Amino acid sequence: MDIEFNQGFIDYQYVKTLESHEDPFGKGWPRTFLLRCILYGFSSGASVMMAQSFSSLNAPLMVLFNKTSTDMFGLHDGGALLLSGATWIAMSGMVFSIAALIPLMDYFGRKFICVYIKFLFTSVGVALMIAAWALQNALFYLFGLTFVVVSAAILGLADPIFISEIAPKEHKGFFTASVLSFAGVFAGFCLILAREDIWGTPENWGRIAVLAEFLNIFVLMAGLFLPDSPGKCKESTISVFYAQHFRKFAGIFKAGNGTRKKIFLLMAMQIFLLANVNTIEISFPIPVYRDEGMVVNEVLAMILLNFIITIPISWFGPLAVDRLGKKRIVMMLLGFLICKTTLHFINGQLQFWGLSYLNAFLQRVIEGSGLPAITFVLATDILPPNFVVTAGQLAMMSSCSLLGLLASISPFTFGHFLPEYLICITLFSTGMAVLVLWLWRRVENEEEQPADQEPLLRKGSPPPEYSALT
Image (cartoon, rainbow, N blue to C red; front, top):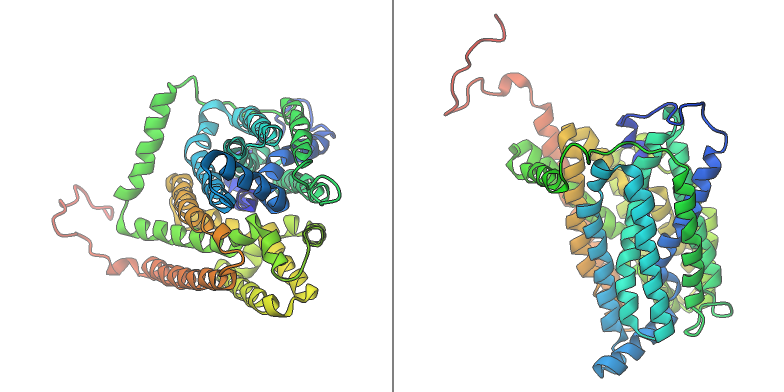
């Protein structure tokens, strides 16, 4: 679920074009603003951690899912099937949040979505997870997961815009990175609690959810003291607002041929980037590394260590977008994916802990750097301003839907054809990289075409009423 977390780093390029209030408090910039951002981000980690509960609680959740499949459906060892459904629900929740909730930031204002809706969705989602633990019924967990994934998506997609608009213009990247990094700190802290000798057992895992529910209270407390930007709810009804938004969304398909090519480029790039994040390692790292000879506690310790080491990348990762260039980043990410897959394939036979640590480090570098968010950066470079947000939404929705389907297959690969599945992901990503580079060349060639090669009067078009030269 780090996909939505990584999207937050679009602020470095995207939100710097938004209007920023130098003094939104009206009485000088308070010295406590950084502390408020840290508290807000730290408490927001409740939604991130519970959205990523697969990655730290694979074993106890599999026990819960197997029990539910046996008790309710009479399917012995049917936990993998339910786990597949849970993965699809999580990805669907992300698509819903992108399509439905994010546009409401313009209608109700930033704080309404980022603070109140996120607090509400996290509270309901975690409460359902606690009910799943208490009642030993995985169906409650499935519904709870949908809510917390939406909350985590709000953190990654909406909070960067919210924080960057209320932060001073010259420091908006720092404040946004601080919020997102401290949200990840709590998720890393929960990797300690998920150890089998602490709370990572079928009997005790729900205590982590109880702690997350308590921590979520501070989202509301910290968010109340942050300024807000007014929405447009007084200008029109919500039905009119959505009608206007979706008309704008549908306008993408009526755009010119050049604009459509650019949008197809964005969609292909987003699918490529999410494939590189490699959903199987994000959601199910414990079975992956257990096949390489590691036990659960060793896997959690390895992920936590790499998490701590790569925290600085949260701040410096966005700089790579400018320094390296977008095409070079595409090739670099493809190289990382090929390297990771090769290491998994080899280490399945060698079972050497050093190769596992190297693989986990490469995975964390990709996740924590924010590089998978360069789609919006490219959108601001090649698209007209009125197409940036809607095209970004379309790219994210299409990629999440497709990769959600791929991720739902993942639970069935463990112990059966995991190496072959990783190779298929790599081949798929390689094909998408070729498509991205091909579309990119087409777009660049059209933009570099001299203006005098364009016909002055297209066939079937009316003659101009006046000449711009007179």
